Image 1 (cartoon, rainbow, N blue to C red):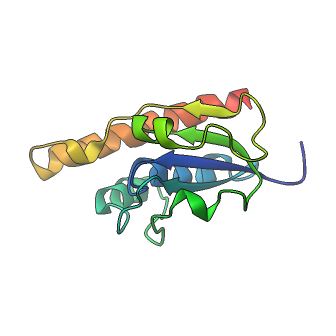
Image 2: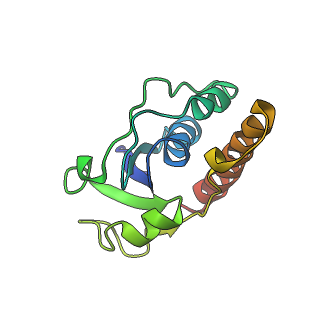
Length: 145
């Protein structure tokens, strides 16, 4: 294994929920091998409080994270893996990221938990479901790379 960590970028529409959660989870689960960052097609104002809360339940603090635009990293970091976590990002993001090795672009479709209606507990459940889905996807992905 290389002494250098490999950069992974998670991309979604607003960079307020799914990609932020994925960044926090990968840095927690695979931080010895990877540095995860995230960005959005149309970055929102702030990370969703429920995304912060459900990662805090796992002992992961993303309260200091801020939504970022794709241009923050495009051409500036040696990104070795690009993972889109919503359809808009998959359709909109650059097809070829400078320096991205062939076959290292992945798409993990995840529900948008902020679209959930109902009580606060029902909304939190939707955020937990996305968190748990991401944990499983990251765990499996880490076995492959």
